[in-house]
Image (cartoon, rainbow, N blue to C red):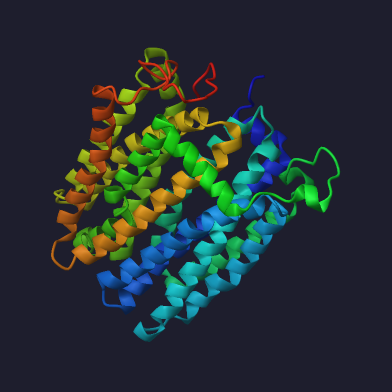
Length: 444
């Protein structure tokens, strides 16, 4: 079976087109909201690092905590309904940011951010679970790639537009745009037939037959599998190690753009923050675009393992150099380069992980990977905010980059010592004895 191209998929699959439109519109509004919220709390708190830290943790931690629950929830209920309800709820929450006028109202910003993240976890879980049903097996790779790449592109343009709107029109306009985006997204999802968002049951079953093991039993089974498979456990481990440094990216972008580079060539703090996010988003998008051909080359040459390690090392070193750049534009350029490397590495690594893990465990392993990384990301953000009491944003950037690079060093050290070996299809060496994997003939 030959997969459709991106354009063919969008043109021929109406339901996918509507789902993609819902993501594009809501993601654009999300980035409007994110940049405007950071700017608003920075303004009313007199650029307090503690307040920014709370906001970033409030954005990350709820998603981390509720993502596994959301994944189990959308497997039992209508995914279309979950997405629509999540969007409608977020309309009201987004508008609540209009009530933040001064320091005494910061609690509203905190609560709104937490609730937006909560409903965002359910929307994401429902959307991701629905994509394979809507695209079908043949076009799943193209659908996933298009969804993922569009998100990075929206990060770039959404952040840029959000920064421009906040600086030119005001924060309130960005919050209204965010609310409107959720309304349009809900309408787009409503147009998708519910039957297309899940696979129909093979037969009618009784209520007793429908009962499943407890949620905690599923989690425990996933963890036991991870701990028993060295390649899988190592991939999750290096993602967590990367997050110890890389997780400070949002705090660094806010401090460098909002304080260090603010005023450069007349650019406002919000504009400088948006410029950094734009550079990162474009870099991530381009990295994902080149990953398909790069992954095929790495598999043929048996260099998948070494690429993952060296890409993590180099991206961290380049990111560390941002801390000594004298201008915003040089900082943006280095951030752009480091994100290209990071996105390409992530795509190769994520595909490797998906092919190592059996289908019946893939969802739990993927959720555990994401939740663990975001948990450390949240912790890294909190530590970064606390550290700014004694070090500068530039020093924090250097430390963050070097910490993220250690993940690549550990990966390369494990391979050099032969304590870790990938299946032959992915690189030199053999699979570990207890691994049971299906290796496909083509690396996307």
